[in-house]
Image (cartoon, rainbow over all chains, first blue to last red; front, side, top):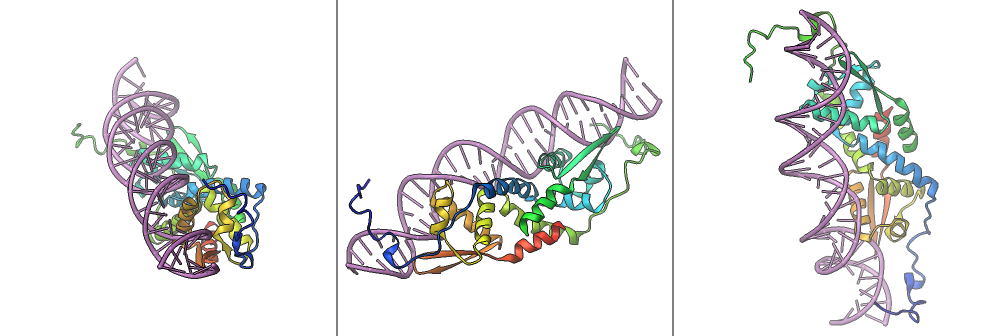
Length: 117
Length: 117
DNA sequence: TATGTAGATCCGTGTCCGTCGATCTGGAGC
DNA sequence: GCTCCAGATCGACGGACACGGATCTACATA
């Protein structure tokens, strides 16, 4: 470690060669960014993004048994992805008898769209 | 294992209790979804999303030396995140002397916005 | 009650990712 | 030449994640 008390006023940033304007980033923006990252992370998997795409194109509710054959993964894996989407607030589900129906909750996607713009 | 050749034409979907309309998902949509997942994945980290937020709010180019003190991570870590964003086509960089300046490439974000809508 | 089925949960495995210390690269200035 | 500095790259560690087989939970039908 170097005791640079005397060296403190040295060529910090070369005195006359600024790199750019100082940058600040308020905490309010951080909080929102962290929430948006959560949504983006949930969408950051090809299967999950395709799931959302399928669900929103079938405006109603879609049965899991129709989703499984669309992808080359086993049923537990798809269930895992659907849970991730549900935890992120992007989709929700509803059981009717033996079947489970999933549908998109538009709010999360709209929030992200708004943030991106 | 059960040899169920004779049981094959059994109650597949209970004959009279449909779960929902059949669902198809064309390959064209898949390709786009996979690309979008790549962008979303790059945005799916709090630090990277905040980086994008900072960069786009400073319409010009921002020096890395101004970005590092904004986050509680070491310089190599931030460099790693900037590389991820660059690989995803979300930002680009430019060197001037000792300093490196990063800026947002709006196309990737606009693509994702369009996909979400 | 017993059987079959749709979907969720559990658990082990292999891979990817975030992190940081150490090091490398190359430009600036002496 | 040498030294200092900004930033990128490397290497290793720990935790998270995708995946699927086995199992569990409801529900439906007989």
